Image 1 (cartoon, helix red, strand yellow):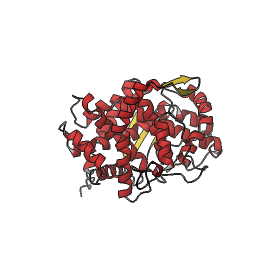
Image 2 (image 1 turned 60 degrees about the vertical axis):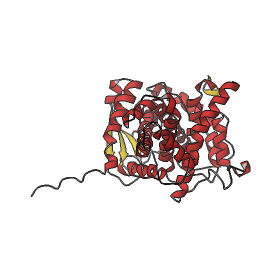
Image 3 (image 1 turned 30 degrees about the vertical axis):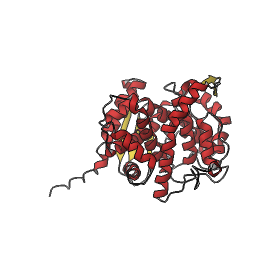
Image 4 (image 1 turned 90 degrees about the horizontal axis):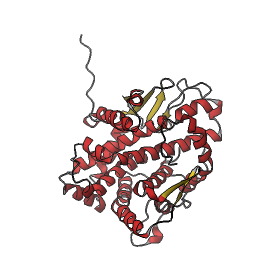
Length: 375
């Protein structure tokens, strides 16, 4: 009897090895060196949970895993963008069509980007020193993965006493937000290369930069919105992981620094926004109107289409500014470089600021790269 051949992977998983190779051999190598890339082993794991993670194999080698369910659900979510009736998406596809990029290619770009964002999030945990610091400060000698969602405990099923503390929970929330921000910013840094990975021609980049940014935003936002428990209802939480709503506000804060990095000046252990230049403000607002605004409207409609909770907009928002939700007011605040303080998610994000500087200093000796702190 011959052994049964393994079932073939669904077609949407065919690209996973290419994405792993791109992250390892293009992005990581460009940021550090080949030795850093050799320390990372990327694995597609057959698992029905929406998750990805990074697990230390030794003090210097790491497994980065992505569950098949993560790729499948992200693929399906990006497919929703193609079927909902949303004027912003129709304009998005029409703009790319003008450059001979059809709707399937546009959706593939968002799907690839979402997967790259998740993989780079896990790499950011390594490069930012999160795993090494976790082991040294809280581990009691035990190793456990840091995951995209809170589904994995320590490898032996035990939990360190040091991890059952408010200090540890704050560190974990800050580390997740930092990994998100680093991965998000780096994804935009490699946007032309990611576009080429999906088979798009890099020519005329400047003319279609807005459309590529929208596609990236749609992919990264989808990856976060598929996490459980989208929005916070309370001011205090006991879990280690920040709510996806908090993480979305954090990404929008990161996008502010991607679009206008000169507006941020570092002072000591924190950053301050500089006095804005009126001419530059106009250019930034134009960019927002062409990229993140349409992406948020499309994301809202995709969530509604799938019966998921949304607090982005209330009915009549476009004609009545008072219909804007507290969550969206916080989004607008961070896009302008201000502190979010209207929604529970925004206030929870702002509340971490007091701890952030302490952890940045504590992590310094464990950092592998001089990464841009974003939490």
